Image (cartoon, rainbow, N blue to C red; front, top):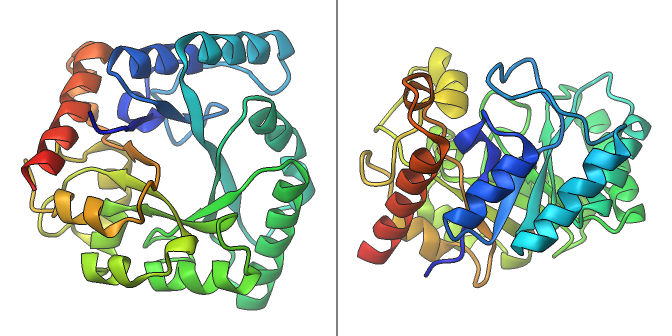
Length: 270
């Protein structure tokens, strides 16, 4: 059975403990966790694992009981006015939960400041023993795989600072599977699966990414080719939000099963 993790946005209406339990039930090895509620994700329940140490401890204990790993910790967003030191509490929480990778999105428009601030972020993460993965995203200031590789190679910590490659973002940024396969393996730290249509209007890219992706096999993406292009043993997750199913009342366990099974079938078929 392919070793997959479950991304929080796939079942965004779950608390951290519920996400871990859903991942375990679906045979997933780990989770990618939003560690705090976010206004841009209105379906995400209210919870607090930053200041509520008892809740943080309970989550850690539940992860260990289920043998589920915290693969990827969100959200770490670097904008022009971001003060990197403000991430200390979040990083402390991620480290306590044994996070394998911090996920960074970068929106700073100034190239020199963007590089400097990202370097500071990586230094702070390293002080907590945490690797960093940059997620390129067309509406951000790191829009493509090439942009992300340029950013992480400047820091030059292969295996510790690299790129999180979301298949949807690779396709929407004009990237290719061949481009991913040619990338230096030590700088590709994570992969995320979904499917999608041939194209998406530019003004709908945010909505598609956060709410309306397709089950593997429903779209045109080369799921199996993406899996082959990732480095050997690269950790991967199912990032497959389908808010229409959520709002229709489809239970969490059913949405997880459909998403995870679709990715497994698509990879096996390739």
